[in-house]
Image 1 (tube, rainbow, N blue to C red):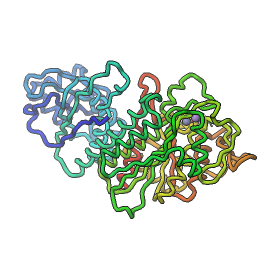
Image 2: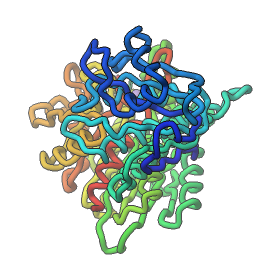
Image 3: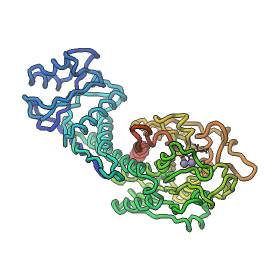
Image 4: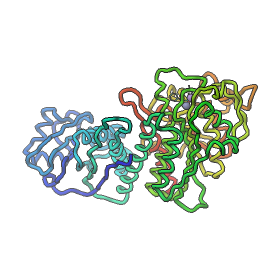
Length: 501
Ligand code: BES
Ligand code: MN
Ligand code: ZN
């Protein structure tokens, strides 16, 4: 989990004198141009007697962002290898193109199995972004490739060999900070990915509680306490307890306290949905793809990731994390459709569908978080299939009871490239939760499923500056690249970084 790639920023000497296992050289210019615009490509070309230009003319490398060429040996220089990387226009790149370039080059470096590489990418620029932004993005991408899932493989894949990237450019405080923040964001994302990927028979609520305790042993600024079921009962958490009724795995409310500044400063609260397996309960889900409901704790995992990142960065803020960890299973003890439960807030809930369990655990966790008098509260949850229908896998759905809070989160999201989309939380939707038998139903009927789930939660956050992120579409990938993504750790961490400065 804790693997990372270190980043060094220092100007390099003459190109032929750079001693490195792999020298990364950008090639850019007009689309089909066969002349070199990049200064370092030109330098390399002249040291190598015109070889780079010849490759460009032959089309072995082009200026396209899809193009790349690894030269395993080059006689005239000290570097063991050269990686020529097509970088489009090079200057004023779109964010998307820059990300494509970074993505392909770090993947290639990983595949080439070099320990380190030197990147001469000082000439590149991105429209509307500064060098610090570029380095943060690069640092995140590099950190992400350090992760491999191995826990349950009898023949684990070998570790990523790449350990260090040297960026050939003048260093500055801003650039070093960007590199460091990128690294912490990536390692936080890797923490979230690992927890997400672990199967439900390993990653139980108890396992998550133990991970939280382990994390607080690692950081002096962090302390963990666990609210057990007995205490939940005393607190009146009838909603959370109704979800865990059908399983033998004890539910855990995990509370992590990060203290980075004076105790008198109000904390930011993060609340995570930690359903370690969501079978749907008595409203059982269909079999196909049900395995993916091991990912139903990815909201909680992102809270672990963000806490890990801010503890590593030693941010001068206070954060309280509350994770509602439970398993949703059918049994003769399980909650049934039509059952009415009383939440910690005193509001009663008719459980019309036991598969809408996320909001049932979150509402009590939100009420619990209120006791810390947080200055803001964000819950993160793989809450609804409807969110995936609405936004697909590219953006998390963002809801808030204060528009300026949503704006603050959106700008953090844009800054770090962890996309979110502001969704409506209009009163008109609230009526969909009406029922004759309780203060509210736990489902909102046809239409706007992600919105009505957010409406449900909003009823428990009335007195707080609250936001909700539905990450059902963004927290993991399906298909060939099946795996947890680590989102929205970057968004959360960036928000907290901005709050601390
Ligand atoms: N964990 C699921 C939401 C989910 C489903 C996330 C698929 C990602 C992919 C949640 O607990 C759930 O089952 N929601 C129901 C709510 C419905 C019963 C109102 C859903 O979305 O179908
Ligand atoms: Mn469910
Ligand atoms: Zn769920």
